[in-house]
Length: 151
Image (cartoon, rainbow, N blue to C red):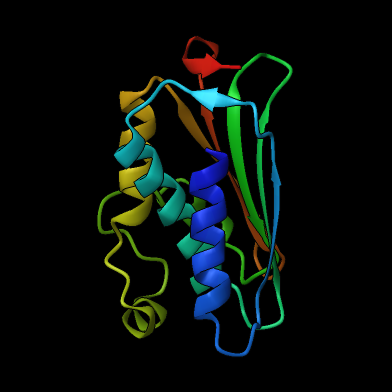
């Protein structure tokens, strides 16, 4: 996971021509996961790319990989971007659901990213939690069960 997260965050850091997003990594390097590499990479890429797409320039994105108090392996992706209105929170993981069609067409979003994340987590016995306040950003927490943790 440390390598996956480092590679993805480096890609986005290099992709930003003006260096507008500050991506901070806090990764437990010895926390490993028993999972399909390609699927976990896809999950991480979707969560981080969403944070970059829906966070305005000069914003920060915090990425944290850690083991919580219940022994689960968790990935938090937190931004200080646009946020999500309460009426949309329950629907953001539905296939093809887009909060703002205008903004989605600008960013090339299909409304599948979070549905894919949810599916990958489900296949691995995990769960996704979303917390957001409109205008203040969002936190996406993806956790895998303790049985998938390799330390």
